[in-house]
Length: 161
Picture (cartoon, helix red, strand yellow):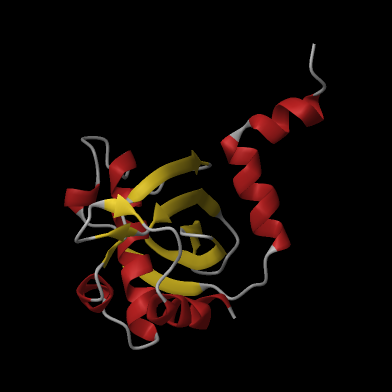
C-alpha cells in the first residue's frame, strides 16, 4: 500500500495546491457576479461555468499587459488546452460576487501552465483551485511547436515576472 504522501503526489488536485503555494503571489484578479445563467436549477454555479470564468481571466490577464489573444493567434500560434484539473472546494451560488485569480505559473518548452483560484472578495473563502496547461500549435502546420517563437516568449515573460 502506498503512503498517503505518495498517493497525494499522484493526485492532480494535490499538485495544484502544492505548486500554488510555492509560487509568487503575482495573481491577476477578475471579479465575477453570479447571474442566473451561470447556475443550475438549485442556484448553484454549474461546474463548467468555472472553466469559462478561468478562460476569461486568462484572456483579461493578457489584455492587462496590452496583448489581445487575437494578436498571439496572428503571430501564427494557437494555444489549445491540453490538460485541465479542477478541484471544487465549496459551491458558489446565485447572487454572490467572487474573484477569479489567474497567473502564468510555468512555461516549460511549449507548455504554458496557469494556476487559478476562485475565492471570496475578502479572500477568506476558497471555492475552486485549478491548473490548466496549454501548448503552442503552429497554426499553419497544425503541429505542436518545438519552441516558443521569440515574440510570444517575450510577451509571456511579462506575465511570469
